[in-house]
Amino acid sequence: MMSEQDKPEENNARTTEQNETTPVAKAPETVAQMPPPPPPPTSKLIKTKRSTLWWMLLVLLVGITIILWAWRIGPFHTAVEQTDNSYVKGKTTILSSQINGYIKDVLVKDFDQVKQGQVLMHIDATTYDQKVTQAASGVEQAENSLANQTQAIAQRQADVVAAQAKLDQVKAQYDLSVAQLKRYQQLGDSGAASKSEQDKAAADAQNNHALLKQAEANILVAQEALKTAQVAQTGLKAQVNSAQAQLDQANTTKDYSTIVAPLDGQLGEVNPRVGQYVAAGTQLLYLIPTQTWVIANFKETQIANMKIGQKAYFTVDAMNHQKFTGHVEQISPAAGSEFSVLKPDNATGNFTKVVQRISVRIAIDPNQKGIENLRPGMSVISSVDTDS
Image 1 (cartoon, one colour):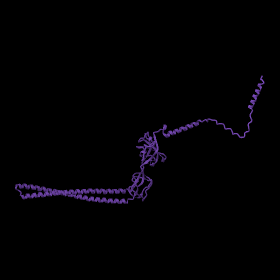
Image 2 (image 1 turned 90 degrees about the horizontal axis):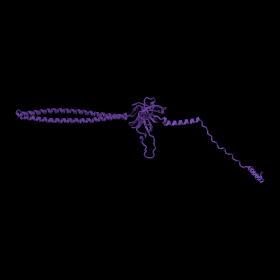
Image 3 (image 1 turned 180 degrees about the vertical axis):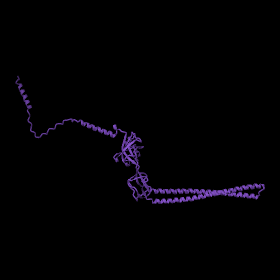
Image 4 (image 1 turned 135 degrees about the vertical axis):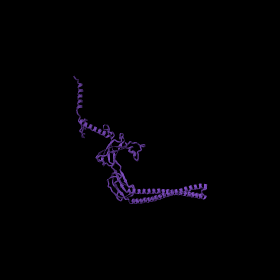
C-alpha cells in the first residue's frame, strides 16, 4: 500500500503532465501568413533512345569524314594535287602604230576573227609617198653618176692599153737602134763603117731610149688615172647603196601605214576611229591568238612529286565546269614572290611563315571539244596526277 505522503507527489505529477499537454490559447493573428514555399524539384533521369545515339554517332562520323576528305588525309590521301588558283593564259599581242599620221580607214570590228597578214586599218601615207618618190630620184641620180664613171673607167683602161702598145713600139725601136749601134761599132773597128755612121747610130739609140722612158712614164700616168677612176667608182657605188637604203627605208615607212595581223587570232575592242591622229607607239588594237595554256599556282607543299610530262586536267568555271585534259609542260624556277617588284624582307621584325606558290604551266591537249571557247583570264580548277 502507498502511504499518504506518496499520494500528494503523484497528484502533483499528474497535474504537471496535464498542464504540459493542455494547449495554450493563441492570440488572434492580425497579418495574413505567406503561402508555404513549393517543394524542391526532384531530379529525374530521362532515358535516351537508342536510335538517337545512333544518329549522333552518324553525324560525328560524317563530320570527321568531311574533315579527312577536305584535308586529303587518312583514307582520302591521293596522289592528285589540286588548286583553284589557276587561270587560262594566252599571248596578248598589242598592235601599235610605228608612224605618225591620221587614220584613213578601219576595216575590222570588235572581237573579229582575223588571219595572219589580214589588213586591219590604214594610216594616211601621202607624206610617205612623197618621201618614196624623193628617195627613188636620189637612187636614179646616183646610178647615172655611177654609169658615167663606169664609162670613164673604160676610157682609162683604153688609155692604158694604148700606152702599153706605144711602150712596146718604142721598146722595139730602141732595141733595133741598140743592135744597129753595136753593128756599126763592130764595122767601125774593122774600118768598114765611117765615124759619122757610128755617131748617127748612137744618136738614134739615144733618141729611142728617151722615147722609151717617155712611153714608160705615159703608161704609169694612164694606170694612175685608171686607179683614180676606179676609186671614184667605189665611192659612187657607195652612194648608190646609200640612196637605195634610203629608198628601202622610205618604202618600209610607207608600209607601216598599213596595219596587218601578225598571226591568227581574235581582236579585242576596236577603239581607233577614222580621222583620229595617232603618234608612233600609240596602242591601236589587241590581238589574242588561238593558242592557250593554263598557269596553276600550287602550294609549295604540293609540288614535291610533280614532274614535267605528268598528266593533268582542269575544269572551267565559265563553261559549266567542263573538263579538259593536258600535261605538265614546265615548272617555275622560283616562287611567285621572287618575281615581285617589292620582295619581302624576313630579316627584321616579326616573322610570319606564309606558304609560297609555285607556278606550273599546263599544256592543253589538242582536238578537244570546246577548246576553241577557252579565253585567257578564265578561272579554272587544275589537278595534276603525280603518279602518272
